[in-house]
Image (cartoon, rainbow, N blue to C red; front, side, top):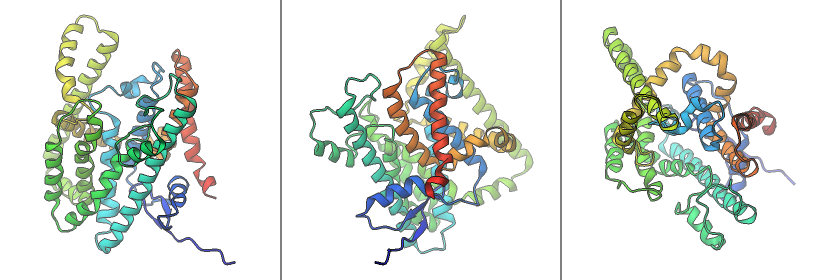
Length: 402
C-alpha cells in the first residue's frame, strides 16, 4: 500500500503555524496541526512578540485569579481601565494585515480567502470542541466543585442541545471563549482585505465604526453575546494599520523631528497619567488609601461605568489606543534589555500566541478544580507552576513536532 503524502503550507496570522492541507471531514488533522506544528518566521517585529508575551502572562494570571500572589502588580488583577485582551486582538489584526494583506497583495485573492477560511475552520473547531469538552467534564465529575468555572449549562440539558448552542455561539463556557471572537472576525476578514487591496481602507474603518456604534449597550450577561460586534473595531483597525504599516512608518519618519517629539511626549504623558490614575483607583478599591479615599471612591463611581470591558465604550477605546502606542514606544525603546532579561519567556509565548492561549486555558480549568486558593506563598507557587507548565509545553513543541 502506498502511504498518502500530506502537503503542508503556512497558515498563521502571527506565529507561522503550519497546517495540514486535509479535507474538512478529517478535523483531527486541523486540531493536531493547530497545536503542535510550527514554522519559524524570519520577518517578525520583536516588540510585538514581546508585548504579546506580556499580554499572555497577564491573561493567564487574571484567569487563574489566585490573589494575592505577589505578582498582582503585573496586571493589577485585570481591574485597570484597559485589559491585556484588547492589545492581544489589536496585534492579531495588525499581523493579519501584514501577513495576509500587504505581503500577499500580489497573490490571487482566492489564495488569501482559502488561507483565511481554513484558519477560521481550525479556530472554530478548537473553540467548539473545547466548550463541549469543558462542559462534559464539569457535568461528569465536578458540579459540586467550588473551583468549577461559573456559567456552565444545567446538567439536565441534553448533550445535543448543549453542543448545538455551543456551535452556534449561543452558549459560552470555558477559558477559550474568546476564540469565538476570532472566528467571527475571520468570517469578514476576506472582505476587509479585498477592500484594502482597492485602497478603500476608509470603507473598512467606516463599516467597523458603524457596527460598533449601532450595537446596543446591553448589561451582563447579555453583553457577552454582543461583545464581538463591539470588539471588532479593535481587530479591524489593527488590520488596516498592519496593511499600511510601511506607509505609516514612512509617514512618521518624514515628519519634522519637532512634531515627532511633540506627539511622542503627549502620548507618553497622557498614557502615563491615565495609567497612574487607574492604578490609584484600583489600589484604593482594595486598600483604602488614607486622606483621599472618599474622593477617589467617588471618582471611581463616575469613571468605571465608562470602562465596561464588554461594551468597549469610546472612553475605554481611546484609553486603549493611548496605552497601546505608549507601550509599543516603551517596548521598542527597551527592546534589547527586555529581550535579554525576559525574552526567554516572553518571546516563546508571544510567537506561539494562540497555541499558548489554548494550552493555558486548558491548564487553568483543571488547576482551579484541583487546587484551592490559599495564602500569598501558596498562590504564588500555584501561579508560577502554571506559567512554568505553559512555558515548558511551548518549549517542547519542537520535540512534539518530531
